[in-house]
Amino acid sequence: MATGLRCADSMPCHNQKVNSASTPSAEPPRPGDEIADHAGGSGASETKPSLGTGHAPGDAPADGTPQACGVAGHSTDSSLGDCEVSWQIGAQLKLLPMNEQIRELQTIIRDKTASRGDFMFSADRLIRLVVEEGLNQLPYKECTVTTPTGYKYEGVKFEKGNCGVSIMRSGEAMEQGLRDCCRSIRIGKILIQSDEETQRAKVYYAKFPPDIYRRKVLLMYPILSTGNTVIEAVKVLLEHGVQPSVIILLSLFSTPHGAKSIIQEFPDITILTTEVHPVAPTHFGQKYFGTD
Image (tube, rainbow, N blue to C red; front, top):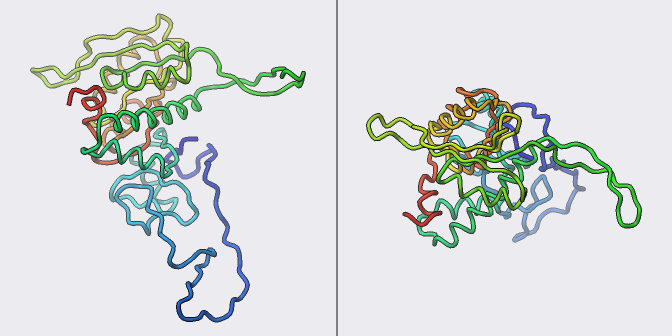
């Protein structure tokens, strides 16, 4: 499940705390022997890097808890650090629990020397992870099914009334990942570009399902830089009767400024992303569609 940036999150975390076990007294070490640490490991073992960008390896929590975000200048090695980040950005910002796979995908996407094939493959994988977690934020209801052996199995299924909306053009890169998970889901589109004279975001096109005001919306936009484009897109959705509380913004990368601007404008919106960093890979759309 996504990690919310707050002191006490009701959502469970996949990372379980490891309790240090007491070890019996060992005989005195001999020259050349490795000295075991307090957790039973080796003093020569490699130190895991911090999950948040801009922190030294020693800043990572000892219990394996995922760090809140990679905002430089904010310590996240304790709950106090998470509270500070939550206060500045908002508890509505949720991050995927970090692991080495996600970190590698982020690295390939940011690497200017990566081939377009590697870039697209990595982007599609990361998109799928974000979409899957976004679906976890949608409501389910309990149901009972009968297996081929006649066994009654109690499970869950999606509640109906969901849709996707992509902000063109880069948001269209996330559409296939959503369709792979929800093959019959309806997807609307919004085209927003900067006005040549005023340099302000302007809506040029919007097409939604006619009953979007009754649906929960997965808004897709991979890179949150300033947040202005998303703010204009949400305003359009509001004009069509959609409330911010039912909008889940799916993003791959976000800057602290972009996330903060969106949440300040719409405090009830939910943002799901993989990383918060001052430098966002703004080349994403051009490289994904081959126009770089």
